[in-house]
Image 1 (cartoon, rainbow, N blue to C red):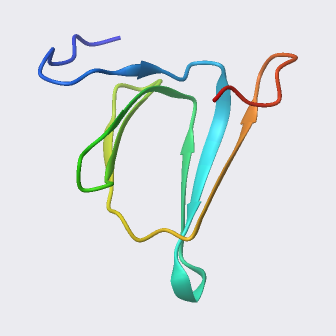
Image 2 (cartoon, rainbow, N blue to C red; image 1 turned 30 degrees about the horizontal axis):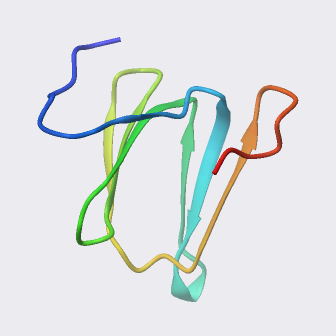
Length: 76
């Protein structure tokens, strides 16, 4: 994995197989193999995936769901 900035407090989400953001009117963003998450003050999500691709998900999604790759259904 590439080095990420220490400007943000990143959360380890490498236990997730994927995470899906749903927006009004049916738009979806699916991130496979997410590794790190930072939630900004504006509500946007920065996600780094297993291919070192950085994603920015703006605030405004109406549903977020994920599947884990271990025995824990969720962690929060």
